[in-house]
Length: 79
Picture 1 (cartoon, rainbow, N blue to C red):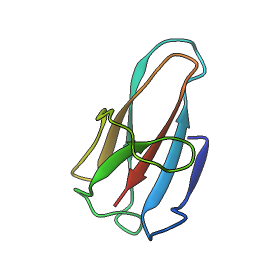
Picture 2 (cartoon, rainbow, N blue to C red):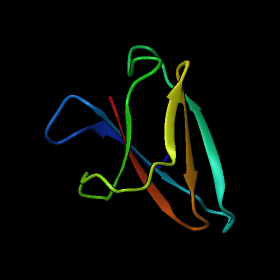
Picture 3 (cartoon, helix red, strand yellow):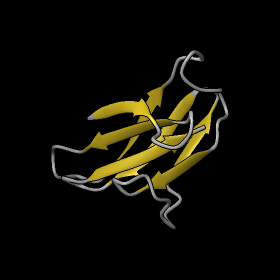
């Protein structure tokens, strides 16, 4: 996790993740109910928090799963 903050234009959570080994991976991160609903909506965004067509992120039972490209950064809007 490279960053965790509230969205600029809503109360949603923004999580930015970085893959440092050069290997595409699927990250799985358990979030506290204090941060997000267990099945919150997820949207992959650019660094300016604008939605992308990519749909590689999902929340289920409080766990965020998201694909991160090798040496890449993925930003997810949660909630």
